[in-house]
Image 1 (cartoon, one colour):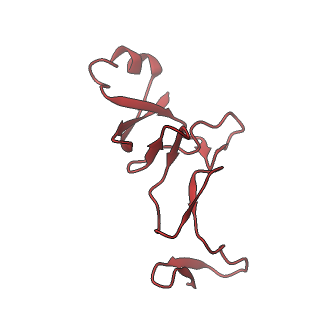
Image 2 (cartoon, rainbow, N blue to C red):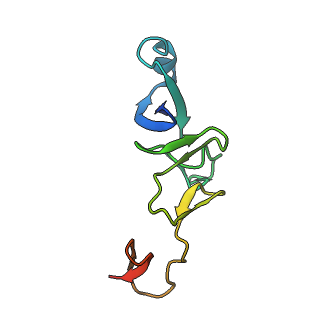
Length: 115
């Protein structure tokens, strides 16, 4: 089975899991528009089973497909967050605290808040 993301105006609007033969046989009728293959096992630019990563991240509804990077990029969490070019994930401008506490990003203070 392969996973395919339907792209409209650069945004993922649908993800289907189908046999390649079925997808190819119905490409002209059922799968019209722009479809891009995605890998369920690719996250942060790494194939979690040790294979070859495909398009940096598994596509999700609302993700952007960036043709230049050939990557699926999740929606931006906060305006101040920065895209990591290696993983195509958004990172906070302030690193997550490295202690045994749990934190959540606070949009009002633009910093991590302890839970």
